[in-house]
Image: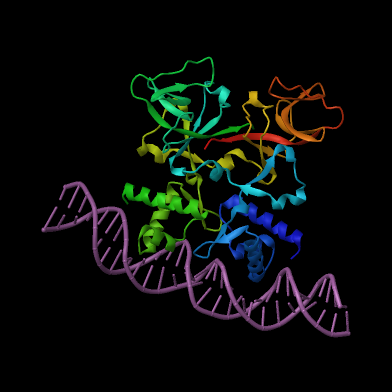
Length: 193
Length: 193
DNA sequence: ATGATAATAGAACAATCGTTCTGTGTCAAT
DNA sequence: ATTGACACAGAACGATTGTTCTATTATCAT
């Protein structure tokens, strides 16, 4: 099969998966690729499996493989941008899987204040909070102080605990009574457009 | 159907979808739920469709709906955390879809320098770059200056263009010759753990 | 205890699934 | 001109699909 044709069909397949969140059946691929024989689709899918774009699970059903993830990953910025011709070889990943280890225990919060500004967490940013992690010193946590929820550094020094903002405008908090930690911040997300 | 049983099965369904990136067939749900009748599965799926956890596309195939996305979205931090009992009613979203409008044209770059520190983009952060967007003044762009790729503010004032870092340590760049813009930064992602 | 309601079992159905087969046409290399 | 490799058409196969039916069991309020 021509390499160009192969890529065209791959792109159509990826588009279908992004739209529908599922892979098309062989018959559906016939329509998408304007073909009339499922045999052609079969060998096309074999090539996709060889190149690890898709995979068969234990039940023999087609599932997307790592290369079908939505985000193309470049290295550091110095490396520059690749030609469009090389793009096929890039690693790809899913931001969901990249940022979230425990989907069931992870929440996303929108930040309103500027108390974590020097840590690069700005008002309007979103933070990902994992409720199952026990905080260690230096982690950023969501904590309840005086019946109000805030985001602060969690500092533990010789069994003394304090909550430290990343902004000199705000004071360090030394909790008097019990300290309620809702979860640990595992990631930050900002959206510009 | 019992609400508890419903949620248990929903969680098993979500787990299956996270693992396999596809929804199980009715027979597979029989095994997952320890049932022997596809009829039970059928009515269970009807309820899932009613509550908009899953959906049927034009071909009548089951696809995950908005509520099956991996991240639970809370409001602002002041609102606090909900009880675990209310968690079902939370909005959910996918970070992939939230951050990326043009998957085919979006790349992720790792930031190494501190030239955008005051904009909340720290070394080690990842930025999402859309190559199809034409930059307007104030946007953050990936640009080539002196054969090196950098990330800067794109400032356009009375047809004069300059590249401005978000760090006083670095100078503003006034490009002499042609300015190559690789893309516009549409989002920032930081991972702590 | 009785009856109403819901959940499950089990069977059946056409439709579609992935797979495999043969056959036809095309193209390039020899 | 002949060959071989390849892409595609078309047909066939059993297996599985989603759906619908009736029958049985479990649950719960009265």
